[in-house]
Image (cartoon, helix red, strand yellow):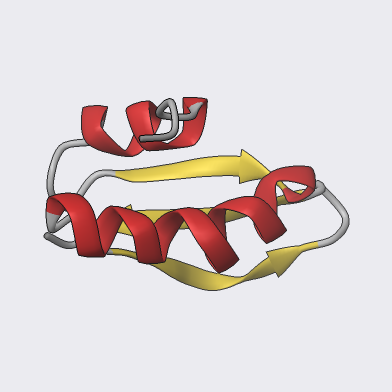
Length: 65
């Protein structure tokens, strides 16, 4: 089995209903691949909150399960 990545460990450490702000550079990896794998393997569900802030270069996610 493949080694767990940094993002998977990060998502496991989030509390339910915790909101975090992340850099836009991590968006593709986190929102396209990691969140589906987290849901399938660990039951971790995250969703993006609001819009991407292009001025600050960040976006927010919230763990909902």
